Length: 280
Length: 265
Image 1 (cartoon, chains in turn cyan, orange):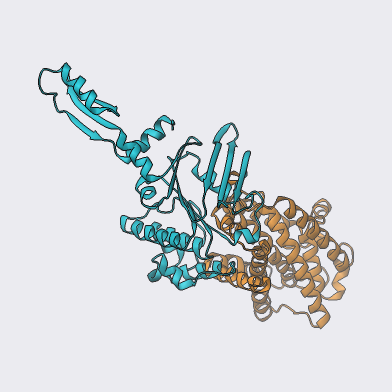
Image 2: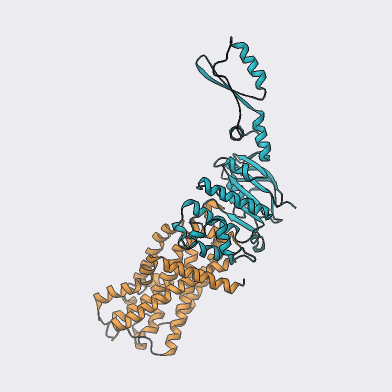
C-alpha cells in the first residue's frame, strides 16, 4: 500500500484556485520533494494531508485514512514540521521535546533526539532565545520525537546556514534508512536533488512535473543555451539541436561568430522553465 | 501514557509557563491586593449604612469574585486567542494529544492563579486591613463551592469568548473592559444595593453579581443580609444561575471552539 494516494485534489480560497486537480502517489519509505515557488500551493497540499485544511474535491488517503477525519492512532504515526511556528517561547528545548514525547506511545529518547538535531548545547535554552535556524531544528526534533512512519517537513531548512543544511540532510538520510516516508516541501533545488527519490514540481496549484531528480536533471541536459553577439546585441537561443543551430548561425557570419558560447542548461534553468511556462 | 498522568503533566507545564510570565504574576495574581490597597486607603474604615461592616470587608468579597473572573475568564479569553495565533494550538491538535488535556491544563493554570490571588488577598487583608475571615467550617465549605462553581462558569465563558477574538491583543482589548464594566455594576467597586435599579437589573443577568453576593454570604455577618436588595444572600439562587451559565457556556464552546485560525483551515 502507498503511504499517500491523492487523486483529483482541489482546493479553492474564495475564487482563487490554490490546488487544481492534483494527483500524487507516495510509496512507503520514499522521500518525495514538493518543489515550487512561493504561493504555488505546496503548503495547502501538505496541510490537507496533515488533516489541518479541508479540500473541495478529490480523494485523499494518508496511511490508509482520509485526513479529513483524523484519529488519535493515525496522529501517533505522523510527524509534522509546520512552515512557521512561534509557540513554545518560554519553554526550554528539553522541556518541549520531553513534553511532546509524552503524547506518543513509543517515542524516541529525548536527549538522543536533541542530539540528533544538533541542539545538545542549547538543550537548556528557551525557544525564544534560539536563532532562526536553531528554532527550526527544535521544530524538526518535535516532528520526529514520536518515531513517525510518515514525516511532513514544510520548508524545514529556511534560515539554515550551509553547514546546518548539510547536518539536516544527514538527518533526513538517517530517517530514510529507518524506513520513514518523508514529504518535504522546499524551494531549494539542490535540496530536492540531494534528498528526494521523487520530485514533484507544483506551480499555480498544478502539478507540472512528477519525476526523479535524475530525470529532471537529464531534461536539462537535453537543452543547450547558445549565446553570441549580433549587431552589438547579446543574443541567446535555447535548443535541443545545438550543432545544427550553430551551423546555421555560422552561415550567417563570414568567419567567427562573435563571442560564441554553447552551454548546457543547469538543473535550475530546467526547473525555472517548468515553473515559468507551467507546462510539463 | 494514561490520561490522568497527561493531565497532571500538562497542568504542571501550564503553571510553570504562567510563573515564567512576570507580567502575569504581577498584574494578574496581585491585582486584587493592589485594588484592596488603593480602595482600602481611600475608604479606610468607612462603615456601611447602620451596620458595623467596613467597606473593606464588603470589597474583599467583591474582589474574590473578581478574582474568579480575572483568573479564568480574562486569563483564558486572552491566552487562547494568543495560542491560536502563535501556532500552539495547531501544533497540539496535530499531535496525538487528547483534546481534553489542553483544557485541563488551562483550568489548572486558572485555578492556580485564583488560589494564589485568594491567599494573597486574605492573608494581607487579614493582617494589614483587619479583614474578618469565615469562622466556621460550613462557611469555608460555602467558600469552596462558590469558588469551584465560579471558576468553572468563568473558565467556560473565557473559552467561549476566545472563539470570537482574532488574537491575544484584540482579546485583551475586549475582555478587560467587559470585566471592568461588571465590576462597576455588580457590587464590587460600589455597594450593589446603592446602585440604580436598571443597573442592578442588567448585572443580575450575569455571573459576577451572583459570585460577589455569594461571597458576601461567606465574608459578611449574617445580619448584613438585611442590607441586600433581596434581604438575603440567596446562595441557592446564585448556585442555580452560575450553573445555568456553566451549561450555556459549555454549549457555546462545544459548537464554536476551533483550534486553527479561520484562514488556516
